[in-house]
Amino acid sequence: MEFSSFTFTVTEECNFNCSYCFQNIGRRYIDISTTEKALDFFFPLLTEECYVNFYGGEPLLAYDQIRHAVFALEKKNRKLKKNVQFSMTTNGSLINDDILSFLSQHKFLLTVSFDGLAQNISRKSDSFEHIVSIIKEILKYPDIELETNSVFTPETIGYLSQSIRFISELGVPNIDFSLHKVTPWDSSSLSQLQEELTSLRGFLRSFYKREGKIPLVEFREEPKKDIFCCFAGRDRMAITPDGKLWGCCLFPDFLRKEEETEKYEKYCFGDLDSFTENFERVYPEILSNISSLRTDHFSTPDTSCILCEELEECGVCPLDTAFSGSITKRIPPWICDIKKILREEKKIFRRELEA
Image (tube, rainbow, N blue to C red):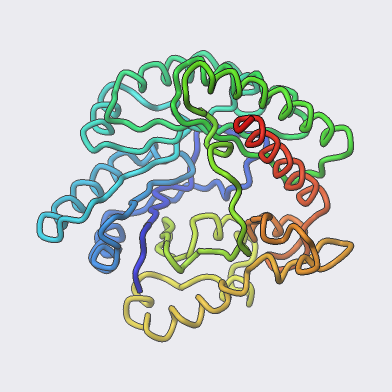
């Protein structure tokens, strides 16, 4: 076993109530003894270049646990001397000067969930101005590598291009966006997505001509051709506040109603104590289940994905298919449509840059 990434879901609790949130919001926090046991076992298994991530809920509600984990890991690393990159995903609302100083000192990769001009609609009313002010403060700390991620739904997709423009003009160096896929995207919302991406391409071209760089992470590289296979458990692991181990921090949220079922046990590596005692048997068994989550095993309502000419250009996270009823079942048609639109827009953008 060797992993390039380990994630601590430090709390289930969150101080926001986003309209599209799929997470299992609860009150549990990871305890220090669980954190230390996880570090004892997994830190030696991390690669020389590795990530240690903090996730929630809202992870900064568990700021003390994060601090403890960072200091404990750095103490262990005095001998191994690995190049550890700390990262955290946060809504940003709890960031203050003390936290910024800590994040800067430890050179965090910080992802702030910020929906741009849709912030007050989909995340928390009256939070827009506060988060903008927080982003401006973060940008004063060059040792914090800042990225934002904006989520758009069929109801807020009309804000996409102007939001990316606004965030880039704030000076954020790395910008990403996600499209919420729980509710269906009808033909009207898909058409609006197409229009927004076309407008976004125009802005990105002018930004590139002016600045010599592309702020939108997803549009930076030529699309790669490969059959997508879930990497959960293969190069990453995660632990939740109840001490359960997963190949990816998203799995427990999608299986939150499936505890003590065959499906839950199929993808959960078990609790930390049991895993450390039985990993030689448990790890390959669960990993083999996850390894079957590949796009050539999926299907749409119309056909098997393996018959699709664009299979090698379509990376669908298997958890996206969970919205249709099962992690391993069909890809809903609107996800397929969204992927096609995104692929085509990226191809057009690359051709425009090369022209």
